[in-house]
Length: 387
Image (tube, rainbow, N blue to C red; front, side, top):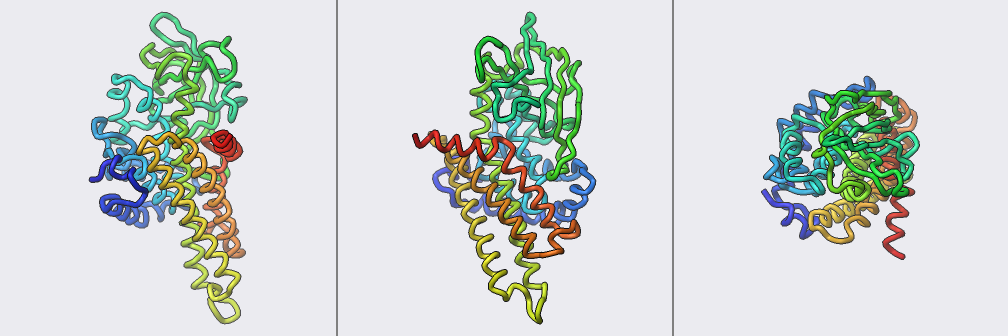
């Protein structure tokens, strides 16, 4: 199988990636798509699909071979996310959070931390979570209130996080805490691993969401949680660097999810338009519908090209990877929202009811403009590279 380095030379896909994509696509059609509506309707975490993905080594995609992964890099991971999201955005999020919750350890962790956590995530035995946001600290981590205090050879953590994906499912949480309250905004923050079975940890409120309803989101609570000092990731008071280094790479998962949603909506709308008849002929024969479909396909293709280029930059370690990941996330998520809205319009009244999947796709698309940095924040990130 091709290595990440080989794939990063270009964003065209080597034969091995194409073969794996076809395998995933077949699995999604046969096993994921039939479950998507039920997962959304019941807000059920799809444990069966998690086991399916694990059996096909999909959770190994974010990891190098020495940690039990496939070593195929960021591009192949996000191809997989895209394929799953074409049918079910909630299920794609399982792959996305596997990377998001482990990137801090991969990028900044000790060798002992990597050995302790990464192989069990690569097999799918464990699932992580990334706990940065708080009720009063979303786009602005400087408003963080969760505290970690050193007590001998332990950290004692108190506080509440918010909007945390995988709440109640995750086996461990990468928690960002204030460790030096006098350091100023966005300074004095540290990243610490908290295992879910630690005393004082509890699952708080779970959110009732517009979309991605098959993935639990909510408030983890830390009430005097004690963890060993060796659970600190990177250097003390350098957690902001850990968070930003992670998000520069992980937001490509959001872009891939958005591209998958957009492609799924385009494909469904196009198929519907060839079958739905008005005035004695398929609505696909009307120029008004043709132009919508053409624009939907073109914007989705453009988003995919930008995504793949950004993934190649991450795999190649290129210095402007943060700028490209922000552009990919921004463009792909805006594209997904626009495309799914147009898909609902193509279906007309049928697009507005849950019997047809495009209304779910439209609801799922909205979050891609918000999480892992709102699109307003992405525009700031991009603009700052230009001035």
